[in-house]
Length: 554
Image (cartoon, rainbow, N blue to C red; front, side, top):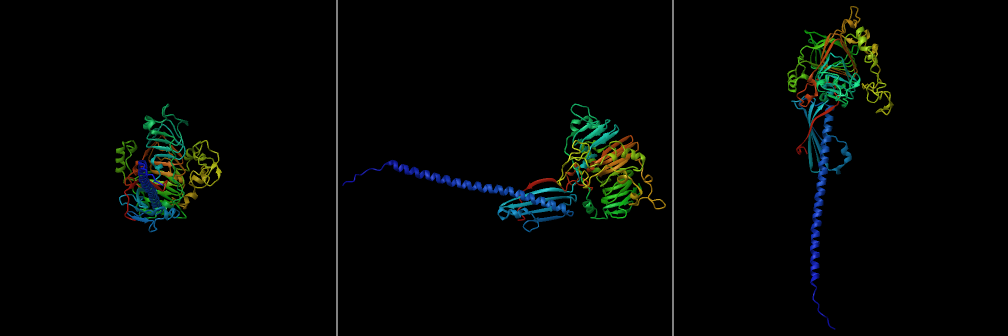
């Protein structure tokens, strides 16, 4: 037997070498892929943690804002809260569990001494895995409603009928705004639906304007139909205003001359109302927040800076003017912005009073036939014909196409009524005897109301007059403003805000908006005057930013 010798094939070695090389390359590729996948996964987890930390910090900030609303911080105070020490409670974290990566959130609330008492700075941080994010917001608590940005605000149909009406400022209606007679409007016009000319929609592109002044000269810039509705504040609950008034009864209240009549809140069950008259020698002084639960009859000279909250009706029995008010000879809203801002700053300490009324505001002698004919019985717009909530429809505006059509309410019921004043009851057209008239029974419930020699209340025509023409102040109510201003020349320095309006003037009526209450000046919390006006929302975020991560309080 013989074994034959054969030489190795060189191709076999090359093939083995190729296999080794390819295997090594695949190993490197797989290792790189695994490494890259791990890095991508780590980055993905970090991105998730990055996002989660933001939302946890944001939730902590919102929690602290609500905490501040519930308990207003003391001036210059600073509070610290943390989930780690159980002073910051985020209930949703219980459901998230410990596997979410969340380890802590911490927040500080600072009330700067340089800011107003209702302005706070909130700084919130949260840690998820190894990521920390920090947010900061400047927050105004219970900010004044934006309805006060206008000299004339109607939560219904706005109407200016008369060639001798002049408005120096902006006006707004939460439905149509109708103009007749070419009034002068030196400012902005806003309407929730249409701007009208003699109750016919006005086309600013093809028709001449039904008003003069600055708005008439430039309607494309100053006239704005179809804007969003601005909600009215609700004064059904006075608890916040009572609490504010009672913080210091020596500085919150109402005086006549040097005698303090209201110590924060007027609590008199037998006579919940109040009668006050101011003179040059003994003006009415209103400071801070004052609350009267019943009707108020007021006239004469007023001084101070603050808000009077009225639980019943406000009866303006005659001229109501500032003792030390600003000079409105050049209306601030007709000035250049820099000059207007200078006017605001210059008059920051001059008299500025707000009247916030749960009921209605009546000006003049409501028992006089002249007042009754013009303000109550006047066809269509008199109070005898307005106020009914049973057929308002979903938009809450009388006379619109949805009136009488049932719609679904939040409580699950269907009806055509809308609770326009927020009191939970179906309102009716105003009834003179029960809603308006100053009869003996109503007068008897008003402290200091003048009496006859036999102790009975004087007739209202002895303490009130239609011959009035001057109003200074910020007047607000959830219901109606009805005034008979029989003076030949009437002027209003301030603001009028209501749902229904029947202001009947004699010859000339001028509105001059008080620029000191406009939210334009709220961007800097030190620059506006805090009157304690009715608030429309509990919290307003003035600015919001992200800061460098704060690791200091882990």
